[in-house]
Amino acid sequence: MIKTLAVIMLIGGAIALIMGVLGIFGSVALMFSPWALAILGFVFFIAGISMLKYRKDTDEVAAEHR
Image 1 (tube, rainbow, N blue to C red):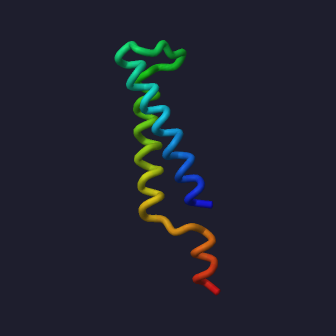
Image 2 (cartoon, rainbow, N blue to C red):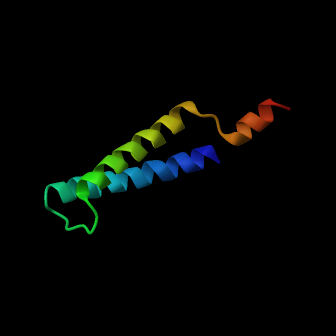
């Protein structure tokens, strides 16, 4: 479950980061602030990567406690 959430955060963060950077440089017209989108994309991208690297999945944790 944790790894699934991490992959979703990673992909969503990457998309938001790309859209934000393109919005900052004027390539894409967004209805949302491009700076906010880039910052949130960066935060979610880093959080997704760190969750994938350092967290055990909930199934692995449940199996260890048995």
